[in-house]
Image (cartoon, rainbow, N blue to C red; front, side, top):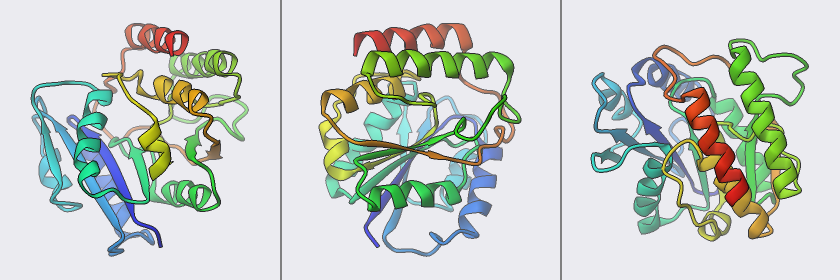
Length: 229
């Protein structure tokens, strides 16, 4: 098995992380020495997220001087650079994605994809269970705009599950600080002429807590990132 690093940004996600820990312990990844985690804990976190993350890994980074998902991932990748694995996975901490889906992302990378991501909309005719109407519309709209801008069809731009070959992630220079990270990744995939495979996943609603994404504010930032990248 190739070496894998899973990067998980966290801000007040103790319920989601408890779910992920149970899910991880039941998965084929559990106990695999080729798998490692890097958690980035936002300094504003006030729950037990850090304690739960410590059951996964001792690689826990404090995010004190920056905020936002994009900044967290950039900070984690600086640590990853010290000992690069074959694959890198970005995964949300809210429990809406499972390690079964991670397995499918890894399979796509093993099969030769430069980049793979999990799509909540492949095979879904209506609104995925647990997703609000506004988020459903926004996700599909932004995915359509990205598909046109990058001349590559993507059904779920704002997914919280991405996988990369080592060479691919090294080619993608990231400047985004917040939830526009995925929009920037899609544009950089086009610019670097990388192959990208979407995998249908069994997404579920977040486990506890509130979404950090603000529909109109963050949606506008994501749209601008699509256009400018």
